[in-house]
Amino acid sequence: MVGSMAAGLCKKQPGKDWVPRFVGRHREHLQIGFLEGFDLSRKKADNAFEYRRFFEKLAEKMEALEILAQNTYNMDEKGFLIGVLNKMKRVYSSQNPPKGAGQDGNRNWITIIATICADGTSLPPGIIYAGGGDLQYSWLVNWSIDKLAFFSSTPSGWTNDELGLSWLQKVFKPYSKNKPGFKDGQYRLLFIDGHGSHLTVPFIKYCIQHDIILVAYPPHSTHRLQPLDVSLFSLLSTY
Image 1 (cartoon, helix red, strand yellow):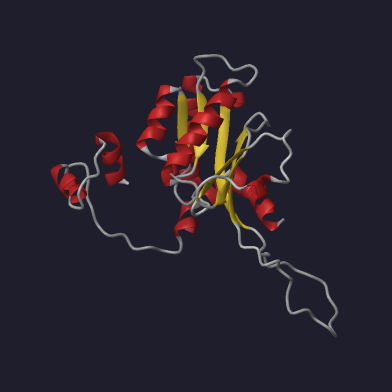
Image 2: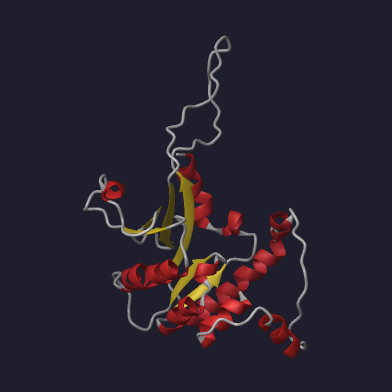
């Protein structure tokens, strides 16, 4: 991430030794080392003191900038493997138990980008298909033109830096600004997770230029604090 930030600022990709040399020049502020992974990261993140401190700092910022509920948004992404069933409880005959639930063999990967507002409204969703090149007609054949959504595709079906910035420019900024009651000069608050496509230099710079305040959830806490994860995507994934 340090190398990516430097590349975004300087328009030139640094060499493989640049990051350790950069850290070496700023030893009074930075250090570098190996961190071992541990399975208790989410459990350790469930810390009432840390959560309270996060929300207290957030409340101070929202009060200072006079941010309204109607200008407070939460965005999240969720990938779905279409056609693969989750493990679910069933009732069946004990004399003739089934071997499993039938799947249709479809293995298409689709990513949904959803944005909800603290006042109960939402912005148009984004749908990313796995595939190179232009969108295919068969992907949209069942889509009703009276429903507003944005479609795109990437080779993996996941978002990337370019799509993240495009979503910010073509969906979030115009649709949150044209919302009834919004006035020029008001700040908008946008909750995001720590995904790399949300923390690029162009993404952050665009937010600064358009009075959009970014708030990243504490690490390993989205299973508790991310409203879309908890309330919407879990149900949609089961469906």
